[in-house]
Image 1 (cartoon, rainbow, N blue to C red):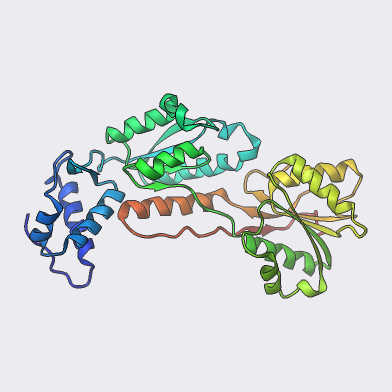
Image 2 (cartoon, rainbow, N blue to C red):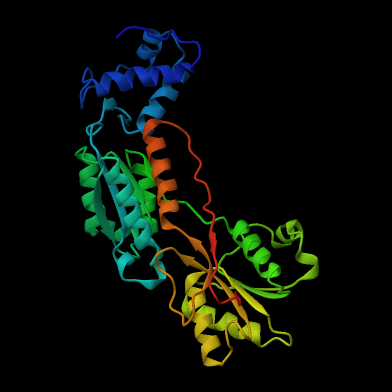
Length: 348
């Protein structure tokens, strides 16, 4: 090994990372080979030990090396693997409360396989306590595959706190926790713009954790809010019965809304049932603009006016994040915008 830091247009620690990456990928350094101590590497590259530590940290986060206190730094098995592990709850395909993830899962697999990844699936319990983890087959199988160098990266979604704790603290390869979301502010503004443009002024908004920032400041940014009356109801859980309850609260008001903006498809199902049960006609008595996931439109007797979210957009963001982590590049997942699709539930 010789000192190779000659480019002045790149950070020194990244040049060291590139040096080791090339040696590992070309087979000059093989799985199990031990790297020299930090002080020796600093001498060889003519840099400080802090620079070496920064390089080794990045190499470890990308899954090229493993570092064990008291033993040293070793080249990991599996750097040539094209296997992407997907770990998730067993009920993803049967539980309506997480039905969105079916589309997300299928789109992520399709995208990854189109880029020559082999997707491997690891299913875990919905609620797993740390003391039970030793017998959780999905988690044990994942750990075994990681130890054998069979997995290049992991995508976790909709699993449980014990799995996330293991991945955060011990997983030796890059991880995405699928922390992608819908742009809720944009959703709110699009919906209010559309409803206001159709002449509605008393609008009820049903949501689940709809706004993660101060509601007052958000509405102050909305230029049309001064000539509208807005009523907000938020559910503790995104379930049908919560949608029913929130709709009942809305229409118990002295001046019920002329239009509903519903920010969750499961809340919509409950609210829609309430409207049908009470004989409230759509769109004659109240307009309805709801969130839907593309390909999974809620059941209704008329075509819905909707703000549609494409699961593929979310899958693409997660894929960009995990591949960026493998490449050692920072990538900030972007919130996904909904697309307005006109139907007949707002009187079109």
